[in-house]
Image (cartoon, rainbow, N blue to C red; front, side, top):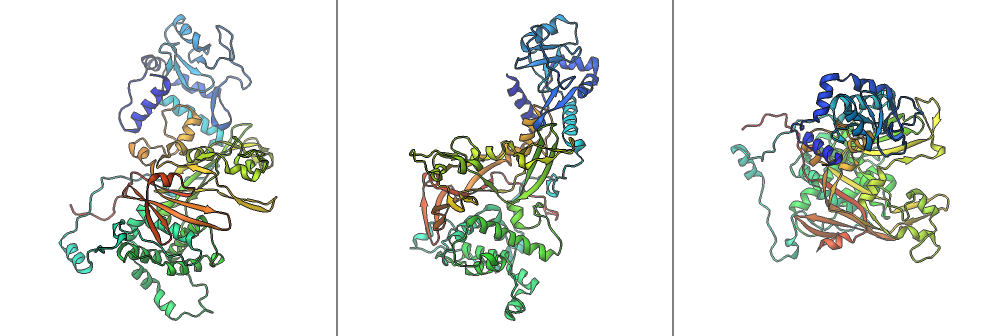
Length: 585
């Protein structure tokens, strides 16, 4: 088993909560003789390079060479922990055999990772990894004093087994008295569609709204919330005296009245999941949204992504006003909109001169991704500097429409270290001057539902023109977000360590919650100023096309070929918070 496989095998067993396998016998013997004192001494020789990577050097300008062959360009050089003799991979075992017992353990001088010269493999020690990571953190953050604290909703939650709700005798009586069974309409072709799948009438260039509403109506956590009566519009209206205010409405005194978008969502869920199968007109929701976004109140075509953000902000703003207590959007418990879609992004800005790192956390309800450039250039520069096109034409405006991008490639590009320009130098707290830097984004906390927005509309302030990028994007039906988590990014930055990074919990549930499934795709066809939005939904493992009032069943190849603009992924395994109320067994 190679050292990489061994590490992942060890790390996987740790994550699953089982006992780590026995460590290298030579390392155990070394520790029994010397304890951890030699490991602590290595901290004085630790040098932190840009991106936080660690190296072992007695002097910053030292060029280590193999003591046997005097080679300095070897891919791996190891320093004996006992005597500091440097050997290449070929001569490390020779050094251990020629010396008395106690010289079997060495450290990789360029990675600060332990190596057993007898076993000829990488070995792991928790105390050593703790010491190295601590020294790296102190060196790159001045002791961590300037890092912004993690958001409130990153605390660990106790998990319990899910149990189905079974009504008791009183609840059965209430259900029987206050509800009626859903009836299917025979002879209607729409009756073959799943419950809740209903067309939405276009009210005048409102396909942007219909496409987003169809995705939200079938977002599993959001659907479960409203269908379980967690937001009752009648109670909400009574509580806020909305009926009385609307009845006595005066345009002069109440022109800034904002209705509750969550109440309109509740009414829409009730109508769509229990009403007739004919197309539904979301006119009241459109009017309420206009009250929240007066600058977008018109019958002109709007951007679906802008509508999505505006609608979530409207729900959050109403809840915050009702609670009369400021709520951070980074706190996923503030409202149902952020409980479902809110995640946390981590931004690391690293000084290229000394390795100092400044870390900030920002809440987000979606992730906007640039399409991959054609020739490996920067996405921001490709639109202005590309001089290649598919058919050999010199028109660079069409160059971005050629080729194929992938969602994973876009995510790789989003989390890749990016060198900031000379005009974006940041003040390094360690160097005390402005320095060039590297910036790297990662995902600190995944939301229940991940929304990816593809930047297909580009605006050039220099050319004073806008255009749409029609390049095809491949997106998977199942997506593993683990490589883009902050814990994974830090693990690759700090090296192979038996150590928890940035909330990397040692249990299997953390791994399961990083696996997502696609359930909705919003597409845009046409030009920038004259396009049309359509939504594809996956219900009961079957895909449906929602084109305003028309609902048709399609196969997955049609979905794969669609020009994705917004994609919605839900976690495969959902974990529910333990109820504070006692539950009768």
